[in-house]
Image 1 (cartoon, rainbow, N blue to C red):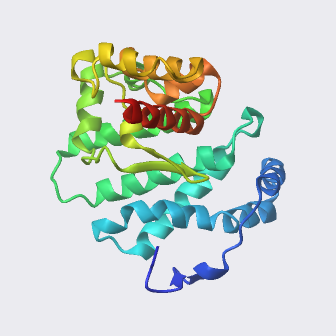
Image 2: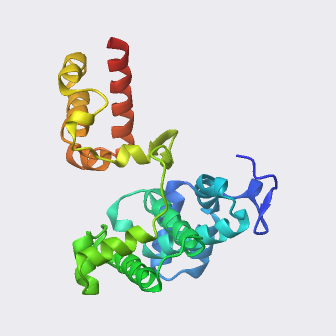
Length: 256
């Protein structure tokens, strides 16, 4: 991507350091022991990650310097809250944190007027979500957030929806090694009648697929599960589910 300048916030983007996953884990262990020098090194070594994330927001007319600074705040939060015992890549945890921080910034600068009470409730809900995610190593449900805030579930849902911007189904969520995951890949559909291929035709077309490909398509299109749910049940990563699903659909398209 072209940024029309080498520097963003005084940082020479062409000379940003890139850490290996092993180096990240070593630094994260030192950070957990209170090593501030390791924390600074980890931040500087992940600025390219921030740079890659803000690419998806550049068509909104926002200042790149501002987005980069906000993304760095998300990176710092990710470093401070990352649990090295979970055995996941830092980028897997860091990217959503950076995106979340940028989205909050964009919501604050949204021209659409939302009542003060709704906005306050939404921010409290997001703070509660971050806190519970850090404590439980998983995202809480709406019911759990509502209970934490001692509010009706409907009030929490309304508040959160009031500050959410429309998102394209084709907007990329994450890319790892060239395998891009889009919003539509994370959306389940329980209405079998409206699937892009009805059940009978799909069963006929997938007869030559291997058992794992058949299972993934069945869970995705017949059971309406998201790629994340499929990955959890089968025991592979979401990126792998995305690859297998796309490969299977390509085979089907050739047979139809």
